[in-house]
Amino acid sequence: MEKPERIPGQWALPVAAAVNGVGTGMYVPFTLVFFHHVTGLSFTTVGLVLTVTGLAGIAALPLAGAAVDRFGARRVQLALYGVRAVGFALYPFAGSLAAFAAVALVTAAADRAFPAVQSSLLGEVARRAGRDRLQAANRAMQNGGNGAGALLATLVIALAGSAGYTYAAWGNALSFALAALLLAPLRPLPAAGGAAARGAGAGYRLVLADRPFLVVTGANFLNALSYSALSVLFPLFIVEWLHGPAVLTGAAFTINTVLCAVAGVFVGGRVRRAGARRTRAAALGGALFAAAFLAQIALGTLRPGSAAVLGGALVAVVLVYTLGELIHSPAAEVLAVAAAPEAVRGRYLAAYQMSWSLAKAVAPSLFTALLAVDGRAPWAVLVLTSAVAAALLIRTERHLPADAVRPTTTTVVRAATPATPATPGAAAGHAPLIPRPAEGTRS
Image (cartoon, rainbow, N blue to C red; front, top):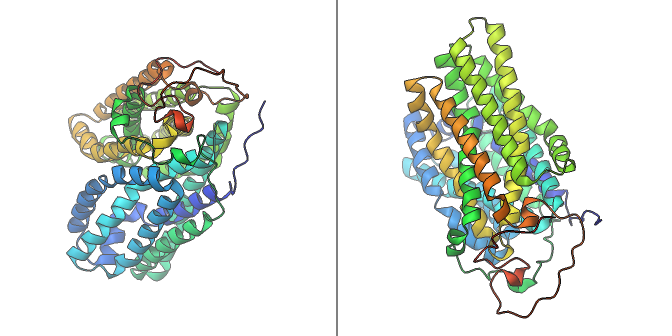
């Protein structure tokens, strides 16, 4: 058995994730109010600008993926931290519509690209089961930071009034700068095929030709709709359909955030020790999402009149939903990282991140349209999408690289094979990029 590979400066990534989470948590819960106060523009204008620039920012993903493959994820992530820090430092001075739109566009592009680059960095600094451990730690620390940031912003605004929003913007900029400094000790592991592998990819046509990876990406789009449910659908369902108190929405967010921060590493460790395949773990997480959504349909049918009964039922739903998130998230993210050929990992993960960005863009209009028909309709659609995503993951499992489905824990000696013409993926220690092996041997 191999000992877990020690990651140089391994503490830096989750600690930086926590600091990044503090900054993000300082403005996300108050987005419209936050930008209204720091720019002086109307809520309608702020909302329109954020929507347009957010969608336009998705165009930065392919560029970020190519940059990662050329320069390395660590350098690109440091650049994105710098852009985000400057952007939030400038927001209080962006009083005109043109200035706000310009700063918002650049910042949105960096925000949309950041998760894909961070996943690529995870792939550069850890291998095999170490990626699962590091991903679980990152997510737990990020969620803890989000909660701390939201609390800090609340306190600052309560003490400083409207000026507190400006202080929160500068605090957010400072958090991004500090997170960048914390990454200094982190050193990527040597590439499996040597430095020549860097930039050896032939572009996004490799991603588009990799059908198993596209299936994984499509399944993630369906599951990403489930993640949007807590922030978009849950509050509307409570207030508009169940006619429950709005305070239950805050309680749901608090329970979810605390459990993700406190239990994330523990749940991830239990899943790994059980020897679960990443595809099966992600499918199980989706099944738990579906169970929580079925419960919402039942709750929307019964519509309990007692606030205590309603509150207890919603807590139970959030607990099941959060358990699904804790199981699904690390497995799905690391599955994508491990399935991406090393030489073009940045491009692969940029394409994968598109599934998150598109789901976030589609979810508000989809959920509100379905809710207008019947309060249970959006939950029924989410049950279907979760079930289809789980089926897709299990069906494509045998077409993915074996070490992506289940990380190897033993030293494997490959038999020598006759020399064949080099392919882009072989130089990086991967199977040839095109075509994928039809079936991988399981470890």
